[in-house]
Image 1 (cartoon, rainbow, N blue to C red):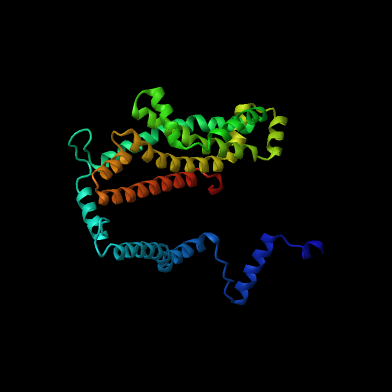
Image 2 (image 1 turned 90 degrees about the vertical axis):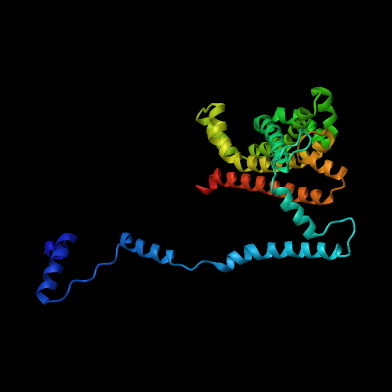
Length: 307
């Protein structure tokens, strides 16, 4: 009696097939498997129309804002004067960028060389600041005694103007190029130290308690617990630092001379070439945006939240 009531799934399936065959009915249609559905979904998504509205919202407002700015500029300069018009500045930019890497001597080089020399100084000063600032930020955030010892010095030195540090570099290094690199270094290091230290201090204490229970070494604590948690803060400090470095190098090169985008701007002012100064302002802004975009892409690439 029990065997007649409780059937195994296999036996019940065989009986169902035999009963449908005897009755002459067609077997029930099986539900499509997820494997079979996925290609159809993928094909439907591939045929989805392009989102022109999103593209328009991303492109049209910035272009409109730029057009309004150029229009105001054109209206203010339409009666002439010492300030160039947008058309004159654009014509000068075309001529300037037609040969950006010319060389007519050490003090007469194209704008391309000046940008590259400035980027080289920024890379050296910024790189040294990262090598010193990020480990120092980890130590300040990790050890309370070190934090109490260094915090007053950071609060004292951080607000000092970048150009106030340039004479110290000239006194120590006796040359303009290392003095400019020193100025970038000392101005770029503070955001890295502060953001990294704040990130370490905000790591949940429970994580560190588990590390103590497991008797992990300090290196394991830094690489396995602190680094993944601190990485967003650290990358924020890096982004702030590179903006500061690019801002400082222009001012430092104006004072030290030589080759660089800052010196080029000052040299064009001495020649009363306002059009080239306006072009340099746009170039400096574009290079700063590209540096920022590069670091944002790196931050997304190494963000633990994206994986």
